[in-house]
Image (cartoon, one colour):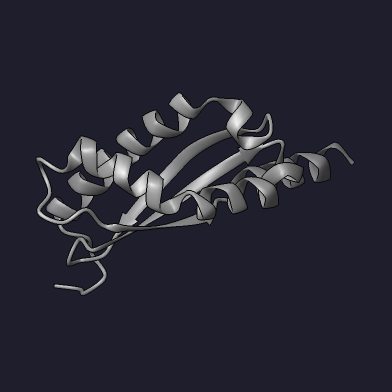
Length: 116
């Protein structure tokens, strides 16, 4: 079996974290992120379930840098809220690391090229 295949447990935990994190971010409202729309586009979790990489897409993309700063600054608080919601299912609440999902920018770029 290949090493990089995620286990069923990893996939289930990642799916749950994605759902809960999306709710937490949505509950903060757009004002918390300077009027940007932030959505959780994916979550990858380490095999030992100790680190969750949370991929967020941000619209409009010119606000991405500011929003990423807000997310990183509030990482501990967000992890705490995550712990309150999934603490019953997980022994340890994973460390969370935010990454910018730039696939929206890529789609936009392709559409621009196609229009030419």
